[in-house]
Length: 274
Image (cartoon, rainbow, N blue to C red):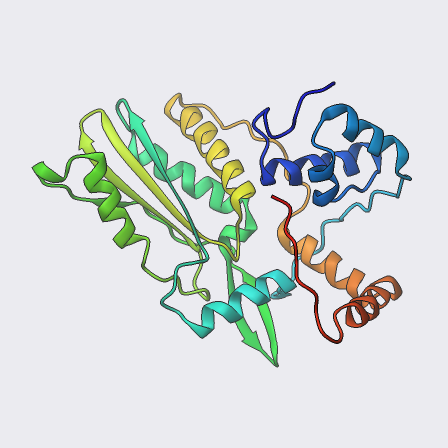
């Protein structure tokens, strides 16, 4: 019970997962700051026992529409992207070394299956009547970009240099998928896959889910099997509509009024827990 969250490998993403799971399973709402303040397991358990329960608000799937409002988080990222279309601060990327024979066709099909599975990977953004909208395409094309290498370039160090240049390429946020994949072949049984995805449709947590599902799909396809993935009950657009309704409710208006008052006048210095 004296185990320390950070010493056990926990990080900020792990804290988000923990807070979400506690709320879902126990109907107890704990903040990231509270987890920071109670990093030992017994202390965190005492905190959870002391806090009151609050009903778990389930998000319901919504019917198909031609367009949906963007979430406030997406709107913020879109504005910053429009201010400087050359920056890549909102690109999320990862490199994955693959040893063994690689079936590129199966890997491409695995990507395509996940693009159809997750609506966010088929979502583009545009401005209409003063509002940012997200549009989900029914289908979108995708291919893995093979990057040729000459002899001296067939090293991980050289691939990192090449990858940095490729990852600087901007996304057109109106044209899904906001996902790119590059494949470097070092040898017949040695490859590196580099994935780049825009933060407006993803984050570190969802990228980990994507990579895990990509591996499941690839292994199933190479074995001539149908991938076994958990059922998706809601998509991001369902959350966006739920959030919009919440912000427009009496509760949302109270929150808005509170933060207007809280942030009015001179702001004090912020001390981030480290």
